[in-house]
Amino acid sequence: MSRRIAAAWLVLLLVPVAIAAQEPGNPRDARLRRDLGEALMRLRDAELRTVSAVQGSDNDPAALERGRPEFTEHAEALAHTRALLDTVVFGTTWGASELERLRAAYPRSALLDRYAAALLLRQGHADEAAAAYAALVARTNVDAALHHEHGRALERSGSRTGALTAHERALELDPSHEAAFRALVRLHREEGTLVELLTQVQRLQLRRPDAEHLVTWEVELLHRTGRHSDAHAAAARLQRNDS
Image 1 (cartoon, rainbow, N blue to C red):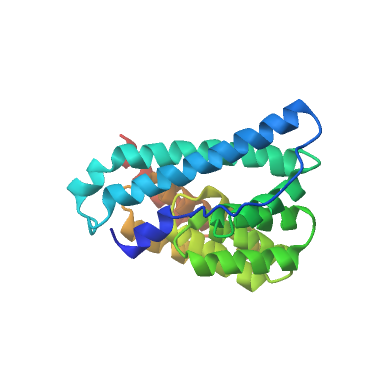
Image 2 (cartoon, helix red, strand yellow):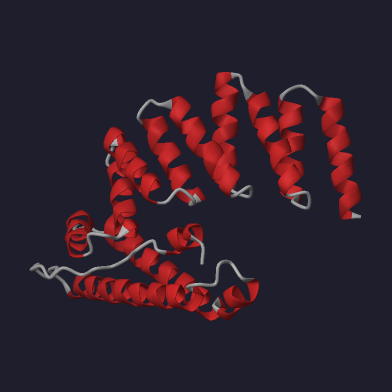
């Protein structure tokens, strides 16, 4: 398995550290804490099985296919853990302190660090959030959603140039990232540089010639930049592909 794939999958690397903590005050909160702890451990185990399944494959398609059950298990475990983290961190009065407790227990968890950065942004600490996201990006540079979140924090902190760069990186990594594209449309429109985004989308089409959404985005940007005849031609091309 290549280092890039390993970096993309190793989002947690849970190394528990025993610490003492008081249980939340009511049964529902105590159950949430217990469920989250169990989910984190299941996710750690799923990650280890995934890495083991594809280790040494060096991107061999057959080996990666054999690892599909482990990839599926990991994706399901990650989705479940994120749902619990969303509830605990953003939906309870004790979520912030619980997150800090978990981060102390699992000091190598990029996932928990990511929630800490998101919480900082929600609390209005944009500069600290941007710095936290920058540290995460330095650890793994292949996560489109992470670059998008970094871009949001940078914009809130006043760094529009940095935000543009982060969202552009997100779109390069995932040309179907709608939220990154919408953020770029807004920022480029405000800067008067929509032509730069049009160029990026057209370049992405060379990599993804069958991606119809990129043609749709191109049509939108051609209209926004006043190139209406080119927009109609691109729309006609898209219609032909659909027929």
